[in-house]
Amino acid sequence: MKISRDEQTAIATVVRLGGRHGFGNLISHLQTAWAKSLVTQYQMPERAARKAAGGAGYPFQMHTDLMERGEWDETGKRYSRSAK
Image (cartoon, rainbow, N blue to C red; front, side):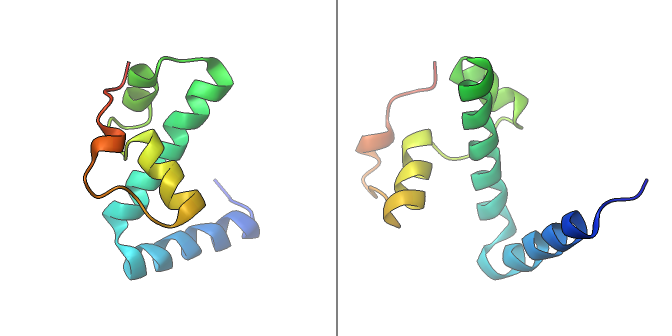
């Protein structure tokens, strides 16, 4: 199987960034983004989408806060609602 040069570059970028920012951290963000896309694209319940995306990741709102504001609620109160 061959992949495009663009995908090859993207994979190298992800691996480099994982080394810099933590592989687990980036994997969790990717799992969360994947689960959110499944909820949006296919109207999957969050719990099912999380399972399909690997079963881990960050709370959706925490992921959004980090993406949009660059910070999160360290008390965790903002994210205490469980997945449905």
